[in-house]
Picture 1: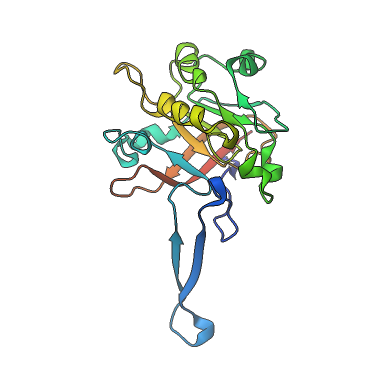
Picture 2: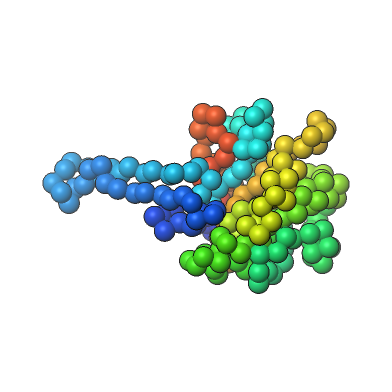
Length: 226
Protein backbone atom coordinates (compact mmCIF):
# COMPACT_ATOMS: atom_id res chain seq x y z
CA UNK A 1 0.00 0.00 0.00
CA UNK A 2 1.25 3.47 -0.89
CA UNK A 3 1.53 6.25 1.68
CA UNK A 4 1.59 9.35 -0.51
CA UNK A 5 2.16 12.91 0.65
CA UNK A 6 2.13 16.17 -1.30
CA UNK A 7 5.41 18.09 -1.60
CA UNK A 8 3.93 21.04 -3.51
CA UNK A 9 2.49 24.20 -2.00
CA UNK A 10 -1.12 25.14 -2.61
CA UNK A 11 -1.45 27.67 -5.43
CA UNK A 12 -3.12 30.80 -4.07
CA UNK A 13 -3.22 34.55 -4.47
CA UNK A 14 -0.75 34.82 -1.58
CA UNK A 15 1.88 32.65 -3.28
CA UNK A 16 5.27 34.39 -2.91
CA UNK A 17 7.29 35.29 -6.01
CA UNK A 18 10.99 35.71 -6.67
CA UNK A 19 11.83 39.39 -6.32
CA UNK A 20 8.25 40.03 -5.15
CA UNK A 21 7.46 40.97 -8.76
CA UNK A 22 4.71 38.57 -9.78
CA UNK A 23 1.30 37.42 -8.61
CA UNK A 24 -1.33 34.77 -9.11
CA UNK A 25 -4.88 36.06 -9.63
CA UNK A 26 -7.92 33.81 -9.13
CA UNK A 27 -11.45 34.90 -9.92
CA UNK A 28 -14.80 33.35 -10.74
CA UNK A 29 -15.94 32.99 -14.32
CA UNK A 30 -19.22 31.48 -13.21
CA UNK A 31 -20.63 30.63 -9.79
CA UNK A 32 -23.44 28.38 -8.56
CA UNK A 33 -23.89 30.78 -5.65
CA UNK A 34 -24.70 33.48 -8.19
CA UNK A 35 -27.37 31.32 -9.79
CA UNK A 36 -25.22 30.03 -12.64
CA UNK A 37 -25.09 26.41 -13.77
CA UNK A 38 -21.56 25.51 -12.68
CA UNK A 39 -18.46 26.78 -10.95
CA UNK A 40 -15.57 27.79 -13.21
CA UNK A 41 -12.58 30.02 -12.63
CA UNK A 42 -10.00 32.18 -14.34
CA UNK A 43 -6.45 31.64 -13.12
CA UNK A 44 -3.84 34.21 -14.15
CA UNK A 45 -0.13 33.63 -13.53
CA UNK A 46 1.88 36.80 -14.23
CA UNK A 47 4.92 34.50 -14.47
CA UNK A 48 5.05 30.74 -15.01
CA UNK A 49 7.95 30.46 -12.54
CA UNK A 50 5.93 31.00 -9.39
CA UNK A 51 4.87 28.62 -6.64
CA UNK A 52 6.21 25.08 -6.57
CA UNK A 53 7.50 24.78 -10.11
CA UNK A 54 10.05 23.06 -12.30
CA UNK A 55 12.76 24.69 -14.42
CA UNK A 56 13.61 23.04 -17.72
CA UNK A 57 16.63 23.85 -19.96
CA UNK A 58 14.58 26.22 -22.19
CA UNK A 59 14.37 28.56 -19.17
CA UNK A 60 18.00 29.62 -19.69
CA UNK A 61 18.71 28.56 -23.27
CA UNK A 62 17.04 29.60 -26.53
CA UNK A 63 17.63 26.06 -27.83
CA UNK A 64 17.22 24.16 -24.57
CA UNK A 65 14.85 21.27 -24.12
CA UNK A 66 11.26 22.15 -23.25
CA UNK A 67 9.48 20.45 -20.37
CA UNK A 68 7.18 18.41 -22.60
CA UNK A 69 10.14 17.16 -24.66
CA UNK A 70 11.45 15.04 -21.79
CA UNK A 71 10.31 11.40 -21.75
CA UNK A 72 7.43 10.93 -19.33
CA UNK A 73 9.46 8.27 -17.49
CA UNK A 74 11.95 10.99 -16.54
CA UNK A 75 9.39 12.35 -14.07
CA UNK A 76 9.18 9.12 -12.05
CA UNK A 77 11.89 8.56 -9.45
CA UNK A 78 12.64 5.40 -7.46
CA UNK A 79 15.94 6.50 -5.92
CA UNK A 80 15.24 9.57 -3.82
CA UNK A 81 17.16 11.17 -0.97
CA UNK A 82 16.42 14.16 1.27
CA UNK A 83 19.28 15.90 3.11
CA UNK A 84 19.13 18.73 5.63
CA UNK A 85 21.38 21.75 5.16
CA UNK A 86 19.91 24.24 7.61
CA UNK A 87 20.16 27.90 6.63
CA UNK A 88 19.28 30.92 8.77
CA UNK A 89 20.19 33.48 6.10
CA UNK A 90 20.40 33.64 2.32
CA UNK A 91 23.76 31.95 1.83
CA UNK A 92 25.07 30.37 -1.33
CA UNK A 93 25.17 26.64 -0.58
CA UNK A 94 28.57 25.37 -1.72
CA UNK A 95 30.37 22.08 -2.24
CA UNK A 96 31.82 22.44 1.25
CA UNK A 97 28.33 22.77 2.71
CA UNK A 98 27.11 19.73 0.81
CA UNK A 99 30.10 17.61 1.84
CA UNK A 100 28.78 17.67 5.42
CA UNK A 101 25.79 15.53 4.34
CA UNK A 102 27.19 13.80 1.25
CA UNK A 103 27.87 10.44 2.89
CA UNK A 104 24.11 9.99 3.39
CA UNK A 105 23.43 10.24 -0.36
CA UNK A 106 23.62 6.98 -2.36
CA UNK A 107 25.61 7.07 -5.58
CA UNK A 108 22.61 5.90 -7.61
CA UNK A 109 20.29 8.71 -6.43
CA UNK A 110 17.96 10.05 -9.14
CA UNK A 111 16.25 12.86 -7.25
CA UNK A 112 17.88 14.88 -4.47
CA UNK A 113 15.91 17.08 -2.08
CA UNK A 114 17.70 19.75 -0.06
CA UNK A 115 15.81 20.97 3.00
CA UNK A 116 17.08 24.19 4.55
CA UNK A 117 14.19 25.03 6.87
CA UNK A 118 13.40 28.14 4.82
CA UNK A 119 9.82 27.01 4.35
CA UNK A 120 9.11 28.57 7.76
CA UNK A 121 9.70 32.03 6.24
CA UNK A 122 7.37 31.57 3.26
CA UNK A 123 4.82 34.13 4.51
CA UNK A 124 7.34 36.94 5.12
CA UNK A 125 9.64 38.99 2.89
CA UNK A 126 12.73 37.13 4.07
CA UNK A 127 11.64 34.18 1.93
CA UNK A 128 12.34 36.09 -1.27
CA UNK A 129 14.77 38.87 -0.29
CA UNK A 130 17.18 36.82 1.85
CA UNK A 131 16.88 33.33 0.36
CA UNK A 132 19.58 30.67 -0.06
CA UNK A 133 20.77 29.49 -3.45
CA UNK A 134 22.90 26.72 -4.92
CA UNK A 135 26.40 27.52 -6.14
CA UNK A 136 27.12 26.75 -9.79
CA UNK A 137 30.01 24.50 -8.75
CA UNK A 138 27.52 21.99 -7.36
CA UNK A 139 26.17 21.09 -10.82
CA UNK A 140 29.30 19.32 -12.07
CA UNK A 141 30.08 18.07 -8.57
CA UNK A 142 26.72 16.30 -8.54
CA UNK A 143 27.23 14.92 -12.05
CA UNK A 144 30.60 13.46 -11.12
CA UNK A 145 29.45 11.81 -7.90
CA UNK A 146 25.86 10.94 -8.76
CA UNK A 147 25.75 9.93 -12.44
CA UNK A 148 22.05 8.98 -12.30
CA UNK A 149 20.91 12.29 -10.79
CA UNK A 150 18.20 13.88 -12.95
CA UNK A 151 16.61 16.44 -10.66
CA UNK A 152 17.23 18.57 -7.56
CA UNK A 153 14.45 20.12 -5.46
CA UNK A 154 14.51 22.38 -2.41
CA UNK A 155 12.42 24.42 0.04
CA UNK A 156 13.51 27.93 -0.95
CA UNK A 157 12.15 30.20 -3.63
CA UNK A 158 14.78 29.86 -6.35
CA UNK A 159 18.07 28.28 -7.31
CA UNK A 160 19.20 31.91 -7.47
CA UNK A 161 19.70 33.59 -4.11
CA UNK A 162 18.50 37.20 -4.11
CA UNK A 163 21.83 38.02 -2.45
CA UNK A 164 23.87 36.40 -5.25
CA UNK A 165 21.94 37.10 -8.45
CA UNK A 166 24.86 37.06 -10.93
CA UNK A 167 26.01 33.70 -9.54
CA UNK A 168 22.43 32.45 -9.75
CA UNK A 169 22.26 33.00 -13.49
CA UNK A 170 25.47 31.01 -13.91
CA UNK A 171 24.10 28.31 -11.62
CA UNK A 172 20.88 27.93 -13.60
CA UNK A 173 22.87 27.42 -16.79
CA UNK A 174 25.24 24.97 -15.09
CA UNK A 175 22.36 22.79 -13.90
CA UNK A 176 19.95 23.12 -16.81
CA UNK A 177 21.98 23.68 -19.95
CA UNK A 178 25.68 22.81 -19.53
CA UNK A 179 28.03 23.75 -22.35
CA UNK A 180 29.43 20.27 -22.91
CA UNK A 181 27.10 18.08 -24.97
CA UNK A 182 27.91 14.94 -22.99
CA UNK A 183 26.65 16.53 -19.77
CA UNK A 184 22.97 15.92 -19.10
CA UNK A 185 20.72 18.61 -17.63
CA UNK A 186 19.70 18.41 -14.00
CA UNK A 187 16.13 19.65 -13.66
CA UNK A 188 15.32 21.98 -10.78
CA UNK A 189 12.19 22.12 -8.61
CA UNK A 190 11.90 25.35 -6.61
CA UNK A 191 9.72 26.42 -3.67
CA UNK A 192 8.88 22.94 -2.38
CA UNK A 193 6.97 21.85 0.74
CA UNK A 194 9.44 19.56 2.51
CA UNK A 195 8.76 20.26 6.18
CA UNK A 196 6.32 17.36 6.48
CA UNK A 197 8.82 14.71 5.40
CA UNK A 198 9.70 12.71 8.50
CA UNK A 199 10.44 9.26 7.08
CA UNK A 200 12.25 7.60 4.18
CA UNK A 201 11.01 8.55 0.72
CA UNK A 202 10.49 5.40 -1.35
CA UNK A 203 9.54 7.01 -4.67
CA UNK A 204 8.37 10.29 -6.16
CA UNK A 205 6.08 11.31 -9.02
CA UNK A 206 6.67 14.77 -10.49
CA UNK A 207 3.71 15.98 -12.57
CA UNK A 208 4.50 19.15 -14.53
CA UNK A 209 2.19 21.09 -16.80
CA UNK A 210 2.99 20.37 -20.45
CA UNK A 211 2.64 23.68 -22.27
CA UNK A 212 3.66 24.68 -25.78
CA UNK A 213 7.16 26.24 -25.65
CA UNK A 214 7.19 25.43 -21.93
CA UNK A 215 10.37 26.51 -20.15
CA UNK A 216 9.04 25.31 -16.82
CA UNK A 217 5.98 25.88 -14.70
CA UNK A 218 3.73 24.65 -11.92
CA UNK A 219 4.37 21.11 -10.78
CA UNK A 220 2.65 18.73 -8.40
CA UNK A 221 5.03 16.41 -6.54
CA UNK A 222 3.79 13.29 -4.76
CA UNK A 223 6.08 11.21 -2.55
CA UNK A 224 5.47 7.65 -1.37
CA UNK A 225 6.94 7.55 2.13
CA UNK A 226 7.64 4.66 4.50
